[in-house]
Length: 133
Image 1 (cartoon, rainbow, N blue to C red):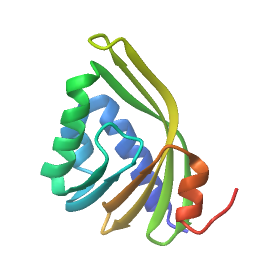
Image 2: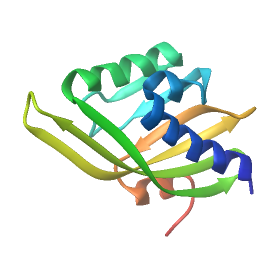
Image 3: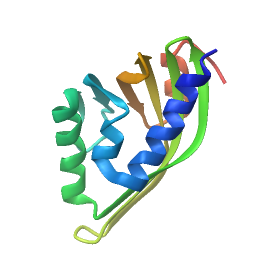
Image 4: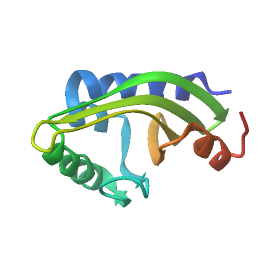
């Protein structure tokens, strides 16, 4: 069990809401790999802070408002946790809104997230981590 990694996930989600992408990046390793889901508007793998900044920047071009409310953090093992978040995003430009529960499977090292897989369903994240509900 890694209480440090659980706390890291809570803090990173809060940082996004309070300080935006730059505050969020402080919880990610400079060489992080971010795996966006296939269901995303911008699927693919994004590398490093520049890649993550690019990914979320593209989403910001569409969505005027974005926030992630922490729902749950599941301790997987010594270096992985699953952060379940409620993603809320609105686009006045396109008249769209997202209000969904997504899950991030986060691998950590040295107090930073080094790899993050994004899933649009908690069950997918659990399966990817080798767990079941």
